[in-house]
Length: 540
Image (cartoon, rainbow, N blue to C red; front, side, top):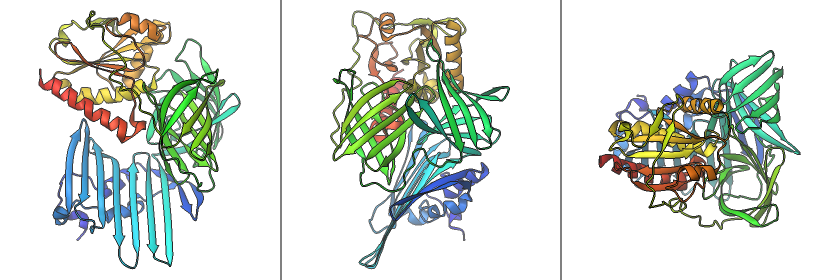
């Protein structure tokens, strides 16, 4: 009898075979790196039989009735995400934990931990799956005779080819990774677990144009050979177009190359300081990093937003990280000395900012709910036009007796993109119960037709149904504050206002630290605000 045919604890829960079948259906390939005796070994993208590749999951599938008394089973919905956890009641169980996350019944996260131990030997297996990657860690030991620590990490490439691009930023070369589909007409940037689409394809002669799904930017590339691209990334979010040169090679399985596992491990939360041109501390932030062997991921957390998904390596005594999200390209370099780092932050052809970090000594940032105050003498209100030119106001009948989330945002802002993903989830979950969401868009450009095009692109790319209104052209935080006098100021894009059914402001959240910040920040934010919104909707 196939164990996958046994009666289930949770009948509708997809298992490892469902996951493998989904990847096999898309002909997903894998580009891997592994660690052998401290050496880092890379393999180019290759086809995968995912049933065999995920075979380790078969022995960690505990969703069977015969295991019912052995595990605490937690099955909850958090917004649109379903979370199922199997936690072993006894340490004697081989499989200690299985965590599965699903959206629309599709697996978005799978974690399994298996521990076998006897007086003769021990082994620990940890498997982790995300839509863009997976990892397998296996530690085995026989006392006094044998010890083996193996790690394999794979990048998942769905029906396409993996490319390593290098963007020239003045005297710096910044690596990025992207995937082109089999037809060469869709591009997705990869930063850790995220994919940023550049799927608006066109061509002029032999120049291939990949327009962003969300931002006013595009890549213009020429195919010099089957494995080489050259061209430019063009950013139109401001009045003056910015253009950076790009070259790319196919089937390069790394962003930054590292040959061995370093002595340093920079995992944890660290106090980081950015300095201004005079050498004075300009901003104190948290640098949160996770290191696996040589590979590093994480982000800088500020009081008003994060630097999104950073990915890189520790190589010898250096930390190297980069990201490209469609509206920014960042490079971070630092030298590690003892418990400190000293580095440089690079953005664009000329911007350079020194920074330092003290390891494992993270500062306490201000609560984002306390940064923006309300002017009690001026009730909150708005009245702006939508992309079709119709005036939309808080006093409209569509908003009467309904709680509303109002986002002060910009279509050029990547933290606003992260917030919009959350707001879309909230809207789809609670709109039928009476919740409304409105975006107030503050554009950097002065041309209204360009601004309207930006709003339409932003809504279409995210498949947003709630209204986004054009609040201001050639925007600044000072202009935004003048248009919203009920606030003490506008200190960050985005800023979220939560209004109850009487349109009283019950919460102002300044900035947005998104999914790159991990469970300790983003998941806590989601839980807090989903709980608040749920209570407001039930009070209608």
